[in-house]
Image (tube, rainbow, N blue to C red; front, side, top):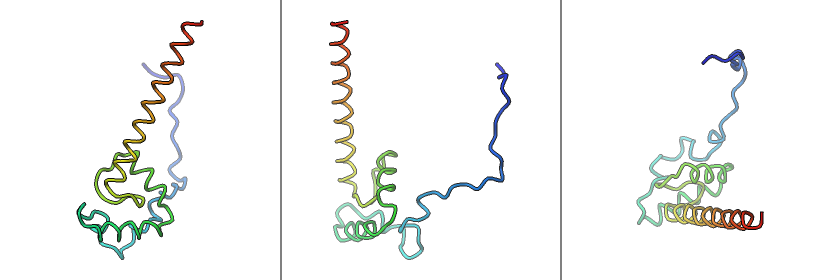
Length: 113
């Protein structure tokens, strides 16, 4: 099926927005990439990565992005693997609770309506 509307394309000469990650501390050449992926039992390495994250101007964007992508390994936005897992669990529980409440509300509305 063809559309009656012409295909719309953005002009190629428009400037592209800068991705937030370009301002991240982890993007500089000063730190080896392994710093962000310490062994889970390496508490010193985890604290080093978290300390670097704390001074990062895009820490919250990084954390949100990592949680949305389901990152399971490494330190992201100042959270280690256990903390990321805990936040994901809380998010799932909150979503399940909202869904149950919405279902209950819909059931009650159906009874009265």
